[in-house]
Image (cartoon, rainbow, N blue to C red):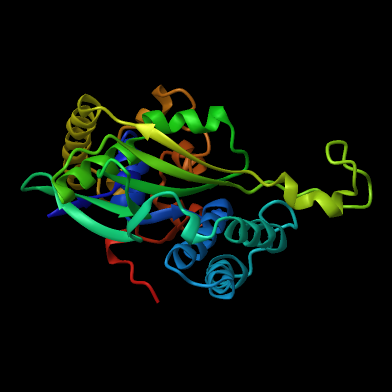
Length: 303
């Protein structure tokens, strides 16, 4: 039985990238600081929405931040992703959003599970929360962090395969239609500081720093037709992945894998394998550009 989550399915738009990442279990050497900071906030939020107090929530946030970022020796500049800046934003969020004032019924906190799609593969999802609305229907919620929360960032979720997959999985799991998902967005921007007067609040920037935080919860809708279209495309990508894993699934064969990313607008932008790919995935240079770090969220265990 093959397993694919949304990350793997999306990566399989480029056979070369996905084979390196998901068949050979490699990742680029550059640290993924933004993603790891997001994981830290996520773990703190799980404790918060589970009824933990402020100290427990902050402790979960700090422990993950330390484990992923500080302990390996990565140097994080004191910018928006620095520990102190993110800690202030996270602490302010949980103080401003007590669980007893949450407007939906929380049915379930983080859940990882697989749903069989065909005899050959299953879709693996890691849902942050499952909500029940006043209409009685169920909605997945995903916590997201980003440098800037605005309408341009938010609109991309209307086309997100992750949210479509969560809706499909929720329908299969609960046996009822799922017409959309919620995004709990937390902006991790650099808080202003200093004695200079803020042009907006007319006090020093140190005094008004937390007034510059930005948190939003918004809904992204899915029609039954959109969910059916997602499922058809997911099956197509899974079939491609199963074939490619056999056809190109070694360092010697990787150089022959198609590179479809170059035909997608900005498809290669920011790819973790970009430099190695330009050298045609030369097998002898694998250690220079990558480390072994298999992508297998279905094997993750919480400590």
